[in-house]
Image (cartoon, rainbow, N blue to C red; front, side, top):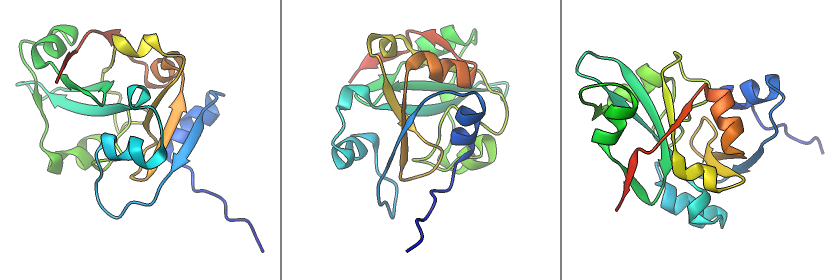
Length: 162
C-alpha cells in the first residue's frame, strides 16, 4: 500500500526553504473551529496555542497579529505597535482576498502580500508555540524566533486578558 504524502502548504514550503525546523499537527475539520477547540482536539497545552488576527487601518493598510488563544487583541496597543492612529478587525469575507488564507487557516507565514506582522511578547516565554499551518485542520509547532524570522515579524505587547 502506497503511503500518501501530506500536501505542503505555502507556510510549510517557506519554512522548508528557510531550513526552519517545525512539527505539524493535523485534525479532521468540516467547519471552522476556534483555537480552544483545536487545542483540546490535539491535546496540546492551551498556553502554547496562538491565533492569527488581521486588522486594517482607516487608510486601508493591513497588519497581522499573532496572539495567545486565551487573550484578546488590544486594538489601542496594536495600533501603537503598528504606528497607526487606530486599527479595526477586518471582515471575515475579506480574509481570503487579503491574506490568501481562510478563517481558521490563516497564518503569519506566507501571506499573499508582506504585511507587517507582530507577535505578542508573551510568546517569548515559551521555547515553542503552535500556530495555524496555512489551512484549516493543520497546525505548526515552531520556536517564536523562527516564526518571527519566517514572517519577518517583530515583538510587541498587543493583548489584554479576557
